[in-house]
Amino acid sequence: MNKPDIKGGIDIAMKVPSHQYQQTIDFYRNIIGLPEIADKPPAIGFELGPNRLWIDEAPGLSQAELWLELFTPHFSAAEKYVEQCGVVRCDAVEQLPDGFNGGWIMNPCNIVHMLREPEAW
Image 1 (tube, rainbow, N blue to C red):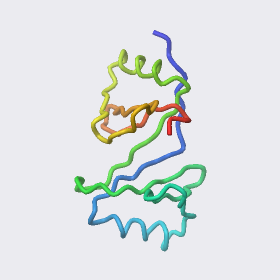
Image 2 (tube, helix red, strand yellow):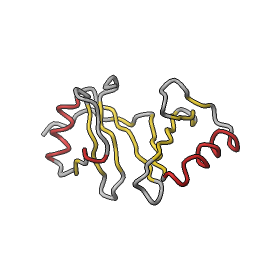
Image 3 (cartoon, one colour):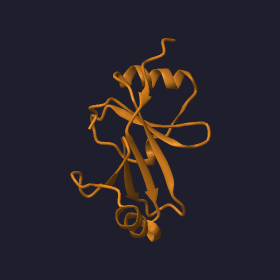
């Protein structure tokens, strides 16, 4: 089994319950004052050092979750590799567009990671 090249991505998704969503946006926008990323509406994001923090409303959650991103140049090889390693796929957590070169996996402590090619969007 050849280990494919997998590296950390720059996107961090904070999934926030509806009852805390606007307050969380206001916290990063008005209290902390992070520069806002506004070029992907309706998504709301902020520059977080070298990373991008996306605040996503998640009506079905009772508490916030952090989701991380991993890049690979060849998703099909990485997909096979993580499957052989027993990594849990969790594609049902969020629908991805048809033809998207990536998918959702979960680490052993249940943190969701998007594993994708850099130009998957």
